[in-house]
Image 1 (tube, rainbow over the protein chains, first blue to last red):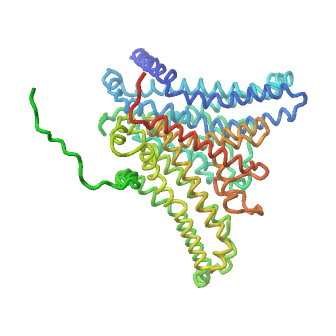
Image 2 (spheres, each protein chain N blue to C red; image 1 turned 135 degrees about the horizontal axis):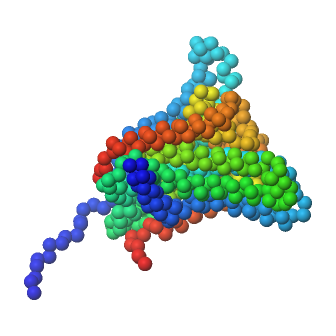
Image 3 (cartoon, chains in turn green, purple; image 1 turned 180 degrees about the vertical axis):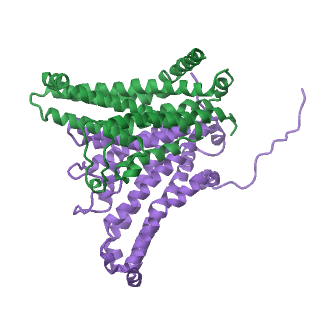
Length: 274
Length: 300
């Protein structure tokens, strides 16, 4: 039985990968991921052409931390996952093709798993790859010093943390948006609510902070980014969650959301007319 | 060959005056929007902040209320000045962005997806009137959310404070009015352009947020990586914030922009650059609309 399940998930994964990864609709996700890569590449080339550097390696590290927190986590990965995952079911509803899946002799839970895995693999390849490429290029103009920082210094550890956080962000936001695509006719409304909630996180009381994806991800980032004034006075500090709680915690929450999405898919009925 | 009696009779009833034909579109659109409970609730809830502002203005001028609450010195706590009105404008403008993201995408995309545009344009109704009609839906709703409550708060303060305050602070009213209009025009054009190009409504709505927030984050990324301030040219909130500071006539640097539309000190761009960037954005939106709003499409 297990082999049949794996076979079925693999079949859905293959079909969905063709639709998700190679679709013309998804061009903007690639552009989102490419934007910082192009910027860091330009930075490398500009700084190489200059005779004297205007900044230190440490400054570049802090700048990357800012880019990762404000561009990747709060912008590109959030909106990218919204586009990829909420489209998995809702897109099929709009194109009136979901019933083809529902008519196959396959459990709905497996369909949800297959679709989620396809979205996750695309999101991970795009955003984790983009994160790693940007990090490796931002300090490349320092030459041997950068290599030394990566190999003998904290560079590789930082890269590992950023890659892990980007992957976890795809897992967490992916699960949330897959459920939104299944439950809501217009996934924009819950997405807007989630966006506001995630951005309000630094200013929320400690207890409420913990009901968000960004709280756990921010604690896993290797370099802290200070909140600029005047908002810094409104920030409420909370004890950072250790990695051994944050990582399994986020995975567990994502699994719960996915199980709920699977139950919803099992009970759902298609009515394209509505 | 059979000869049939001519049964066609041209319409000989009264015609809607040509100048007001575009208003036919909002008339039907408002009926549809009214049916959405979520939108109605959101629209009503968006007046909470202006209501609080009006209450603050009233309480500040009412000594008996202050003494009743036991906060006699509270009138010195919040000043009714440029910062107060800019915060109101900033908050309401953010609400307008959400409204535009919710209702903007449903304006043009259904007509294009169902090939209904030719039905509009087959009538004595031009492309410009169509765009104006669709825009007016957003413009009317966003006006009610932004400059109308702002000017009402200004009038309340003027009434309570006196004629001299009104005369001295006329720049607040004009800044509020024109600043809100700049924002409304940009949002309306952006929403319609995205609606025309992205057929899936939620995606178009998401793209509205994307253009606003992701472009801002990208601008900040450029600033961080290249150690410059020109990345703010991608940041619509920065551009709008700069324009607002000018329109409010803040010459002595009392404020650095409205809520959500702040301009960090030392990172100000030349004003003409801000105006030019906003103009370019509007022109791009108009071009996008002109490409899509056509009665017939040639399929190659």
